[in-house]
Image (cartoon, rainbow, N blue to C red; front, side, top):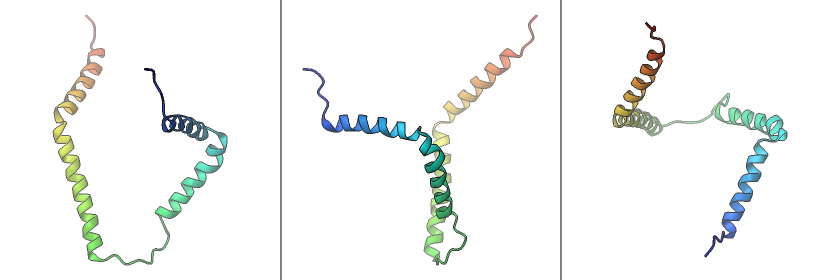
Length: 102
């Protein structure tokens, strides 16, 4: 029994190669990327917003910020030994090269 790729796999491989080639083209780099960047800035940073934010929206945003901060603290706490050993190894390697030879 050999490998028999299905149609979905073949379409994915062909499409992904075409997409990666498209992002490397001059058309994308000179025309589409700057236009997409400008459009995203216009959408994300409007000059005027005629909107009403009720207290529920403010508390939801506050909950998201608190959750993100606490999630970051928990993540750092879970991986603290790895993070501290990586920094120790990095600075020990840098320090050993600067020692004077006798």
